[in-house]
Amino acid sequence: MQAPENRKGRMLTGIVVSDKSDKTIVVRVETLVKHPLLKKYVRRRKKFTAHDPMNECGMDDKVKIVEFRPMSRNKRWYLVSIIEKAV
Image (tube, rainbow, N blue to C red; front, top):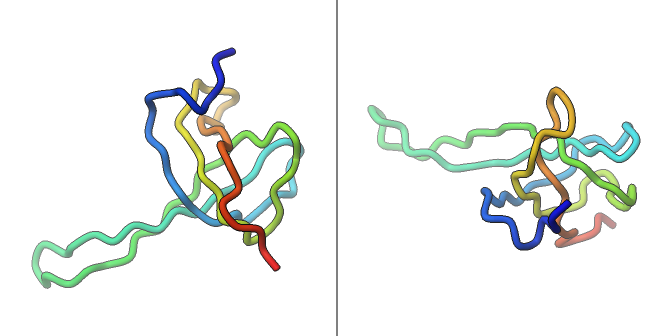
């Protein structure tokens, strides 16, 4: 298996909202999108399940994930690094 650091897939940054599953985390990613009619910026949120092989993430940690090969039905992301640990 190739190391995820040198993959060319999408990289996203988000906050861990669940770490209850074994070796799996749920990451919420927020993006700002300009509304086509109102011309205001709207916050979009989406949740991704990511592989955490060492179970090192906790709730509210800021993490970086990368797109990876499918590991299960919903899990297609891999944890690259923890940017900031929650207090």
